[in-house]
Amino acid sequence: MDFSERLLPILKKIPLFQELDENQHREIIKNIDTQYFKKDQVIFEKGDQANALYIIKSGKILIYQPGLLKQVAEEIAFLSDNDFFGEMGLVTHEPRNASAKTLEDSLLFFLTKDDFQKLLAENSAIASLISEEFIKRFKHNTKRVKKQDIKNEPGF
Image 1 (cartoon, rainbow, N blue to C red):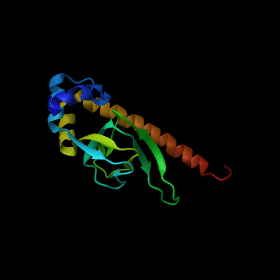
Image 2: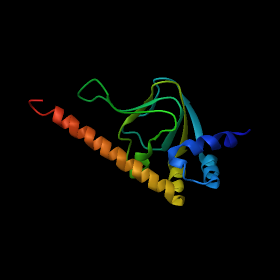
Image 3: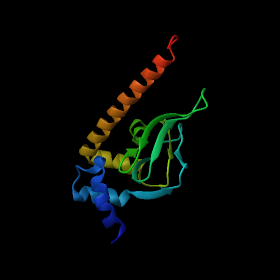
Image 4: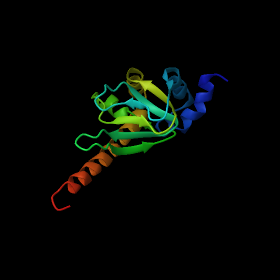
């Protein structure tokens, strides 16, 4: 069984791609690559140019804000198998707004920025799912920032 045949059932389990038909899955597989990361390895840092969307095949990933005034990083999200990340910078065309690192050995699939943009242009279902996820994450981050602002108010 070749790589694309092994990848097809995995791709169908990933929420981002579940609504696509088999031909669309096969088109994605043509453009997808894999990369292995060891535990505690940085995948990207805040401020890096956004160049890929990542999908977790196996492992655990921490999305975080590096510590600025505090020496401790602020945890934003813990992600695991079939979760995806790194899409925001591809959608907004801005540098990464957070950092990502592995919490254990991890195998990631990734789509380059160009392949991701092509995928969005050709598949309204994926564009819609990305938009929904973008809004959810934006709302989550807004709530997190508001809670942080309240904690920093005098008397709290």
